[in-house]
Every structure is written in structure tokens, then in C-alpha cells.
Amino acid sequence: QVQLVESGGGPVQAGGSLTLSCRSSAHNFRSYAMAWFRQAPGRGGRDFVATVSWSGSPTYYDDSVKGRFIISRDNAENTVALQMTNLTPEDTAIYYCAADYRYGGFKEDDYSHWGQGTQVTVST
Image 1 (tube, helix red, strand yellow):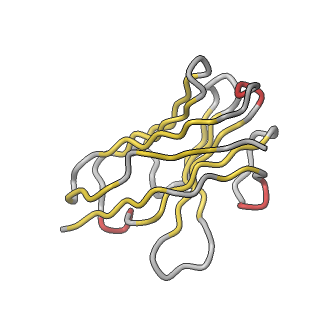
Image 2: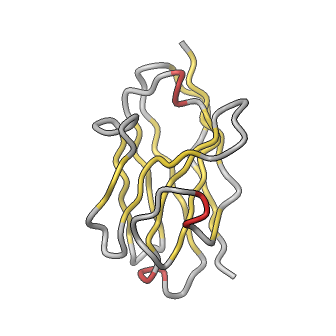
Image 3: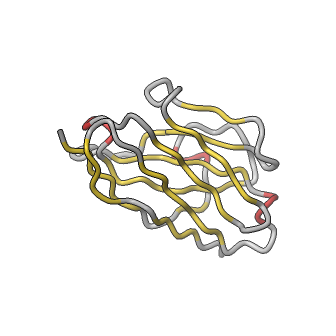
């Protein structure tokens, strides 16, 4: 069973930046495509944010974060990061790290492993 542990969440003011990190326990981390999803307050499901393929390229972003967020991975450290800039209150959510052997998924069902999430709260 692959364990994913997110960190780096917290409160931030609008316009600020935050970097999330996710560490995987998988011994074959480079075999997994990785993604970030988020669950905004009051929403029942998790929304796709960004994904990165096994080697670190290509990447793909939801339109709502394109140009503001960057997803990257370090296969030597078994980590994937999400650099978030120019944050707005609409980015407030629990952010989840996800993993799957296949790349290119944009739905929750496309990922077989999930972290517990880290809260990001953006205030005005």
C-alpha cells in the first residue's frame, strides 16, 4: 500500500504564495504519475488541480490555476510539490496528493492512492 503524506498547508493572505509537498512511501515512486486535487468548503468532491508524469514532464493544469501554480517532482526524494502563487480566497481548500500508474487522469476515480490532505486558507 502506497502512503502519501502532504505538508506545507496553512493560512496565507490573498496575493501570497505557498508550496505544498507530498512524500510517497512507494519504493518505485518513479512508476507513478502524481497529481494534486482540492476540495473547497461545501463541495462534496475533489477537483483536479495539476498532474505530472513519471519523469517530471509533461505536466497539465486546470485552467483555474494555470500560470499561478507549478507542479514538480523529485524522484530521488520521492516527493511531489505544488508551488502556488498569487493565491485568492477561491483557492481555499483541502489539497490532496494522489498517485496512479497511469498519466493523464483528471478525475478522482483515475487515481488509486490518496493522501490525507492539507488545508490551505487564503484570506483577504
